[in-house]
Length: 334
Image 1 (cartoon, helix red, strand yellow):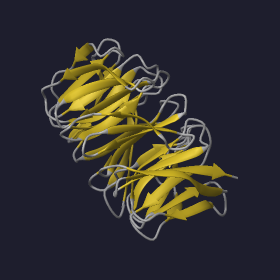
Image 2 (image 1 turned 90 degrees about the horizontal axis):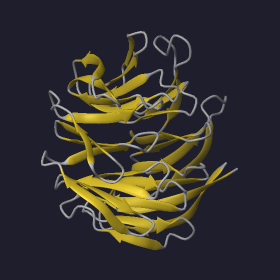
Image 3 (image 1 turned 90 degrees about the vertical axis):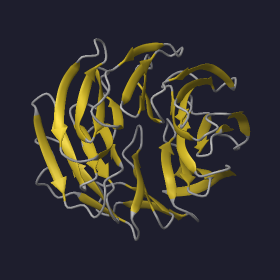
């Protein structure tokens, strides 16, 4: 397996977020200084430059089936764009601080946006569906359950699972530390957090069980489940870990290790297959098949550390954004 350069483009500032259009024909890259650029997969040509937030864009989220993109940033405004036409669809000011997190529900009917302690749900046309009561602390991560029944929101001190239909808290879990990231397993069985302490914590909401894996070298800011929900990849030092979540879960099991020579800065499983991509602060990007005796499948060295990894919908390309404002698209070849 090889990673070969398909194209590279330079943005005005570091790449703060990446997304693929639902049809896989466009890559969207957000620059930290505001603009959001839409590039043609075929050759990297600029299709559109969306103004985004002139104070600085923080997050983008592509609709799962439609050519709609959500963006948010430091001015506290959620913007919706038609990325096929390159036109604005709607904008709503939350007046609650920076927009830090955006996520579409699996069915594409709802956009969740978090700013400070405020969590808001939008319809695809930009109208507000519901505004929740303020969280106890700043919301640090959100994640939709793949089955679509709820939205998990984390803050320092815990996680709340909000019902997607009646907006009532289904469950609340206490966690006495900072949470950097949340992820659901594809089968909706596991809810997992990567934490500041540093550790990984797992909840099994149906049974109200929870598990804990500590001993990481550094804060766990990046986690990713494979398409089956069995394998959980995590950062947290110079070695990535892949945990087996089958049966009673990973607690007490030895993970598969994915070594780098520098601290990891990103991890992402493919959408449809079993390859996991990892990136480190020395600029390396590696592909792994963790279940193999020799798991390393491909290795490339880029000039600067990655800020984002994003697989194309069909997994044939890997988009990478870095600290120097360069967005790469690499082709995955067997």
